[in-house]
Image (tube, rainbow, N blue to C red; front, side, top):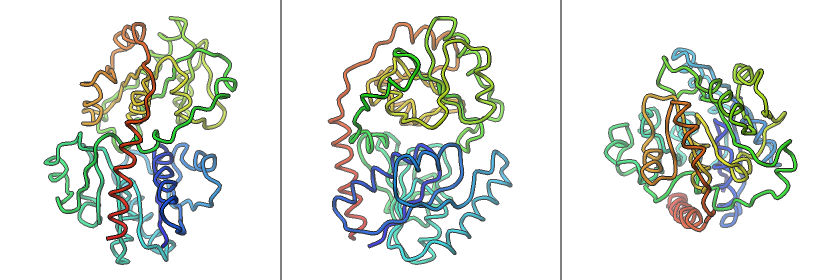
Length: 336
């Protein structure tokens, strides 16, 4: 058996590799990893796996016309370059799903975005896995037919947090022992459906610095780095770091990225989201209802909540149960 893993964004690296490692324990199979040039995806992949991978395509920014052109171009390239696989696994990759469909192979996708347009691949995918925090009727309206939908308890982040082991030497790589993590909004991302959104990151960095917090700052782009100019007590790593370690050892995570906020929440670390989209995802709303995450686009509200927050004990047993459920259902799909 040969499984094709397609990774198109940085947060997918931990997730897809966790699935790959879990399947390695069951199947003696060959694997093929493809990705695209976007943010820190390729650099993180180089850190996380010694296996070769192939870069096909790149992110095309916010222009709808360029996005469509990029999707079609990458699909054509994968169709021509990726061969000999039995099943593809991705996080909603049109390239993987469409190529699998044309070649008569199985495709499996994972998602947790109840605001995205799933119809771009929903009619062609073999099975699509989604957390049960998302109402099924929403996914059906988005284009995932009921017989293709696979539901599970928990969150996507649980799949890789189940195997997480803190790096005891991580803090030694930083210039301070106590810190908060800040990850800016990704205003270039496809999932930010709010063209009028303005970054609050510059004001937040200034407020944190003024309050005496040490800041581990994780920018994506050059414009993000510019927000840190003149800010005291701030450190920007010169290469990608393990985000889970950054979360685990921090006093709090303040981020415009949903995945990072959910990782912190699952680890019991004070989690603060200032996501810039018009609406929050259902999985984020579920965490907010459970008191695991706080959301605001107001810097003063974020600061006030941070000052009164405390971390809870880490218990990854729940994540292990989620991982076992998902991998069992995934194997049933592969073997059907």
